[in-house]
Image 1 (cartoon, one colour):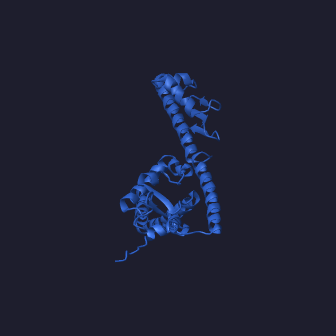
Image 2: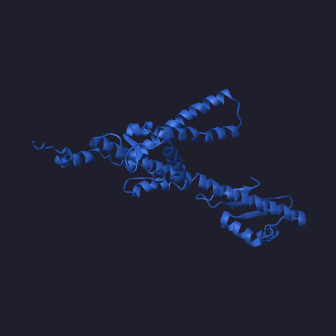
Amino acid sequence: MPQEHRINIMEDQPSVSVEQGEDLTPRESSVAERFIALLLDVGLIVILYEIFLLIMIRVVDMDLSTFYILLACMNIPFILYETIWSSGGRNTLGKKLVGIRVADKNTGEPIGLFRAFVRTLGYYISAALLLCGFLLAFIDDRHRALHDYLAGSVVVQARPKSWLEKTILTVVGIVLFIAFGGLLYRFLFSNGSWAQQKIISRAQKHVEKIAYLEDLHFINFGYYTNDLLRLSLLSGDPVQFQRDTHKALENKGFRIGVGPKGYKITARAKDTKKTFVTYPK
């Protein structure tokens, strides 16, 4: 009986299978692509939720605290949106437009609902760490941010892109990132920012504390004084009072003007503009 000769297809074409494997392996997305997609997704939720708030304001008579509560609830639709549309092979609108998707870091397959939920919560952790969780993507060789590490995910290309599309996405991403960094710096550190307002508020509160001690001095001694040392003794902790004064107020520009019927405190806060704070205002 003649011996049958069989051909092993897997051994006959090793080079083809390797080449196909390389072609099918999804490549990681760039940081610029991820940033554009995130801004698109956040913008979508913000716009839709603002429309909802405008309707609620017109329909329901709400106070300011209720409005702030509803504003904070904006996180709920964002978490649901990111969780549902980043799992099970689905894709958020921003990632779909940019041409990227969330995948398992090892297999490249879609992640499940729970891991997508963990990944979404990771956005808030990254933000709470002064955005350092997002900046991790710049130094990671696969551009994985902190939320990707928490979920065991990676963001990869969902479709092939031309050279022109890649260039446009990179340029737009860089421009948006610079603009976002400028706005963030202005919000945190520049004149009129949250941080600067906090410095001014701290100075105003300390001036009001000095005014309280001035009133206390009048009750005890029957007259007002411009001697800050005497006022510090009434605080109960003169050393700490002087430390607080130095921390909150500039040395130059501080003055207490007194008269038989009242007093006026003038000082400068330690913000970038050296803003005047007074009592009475």
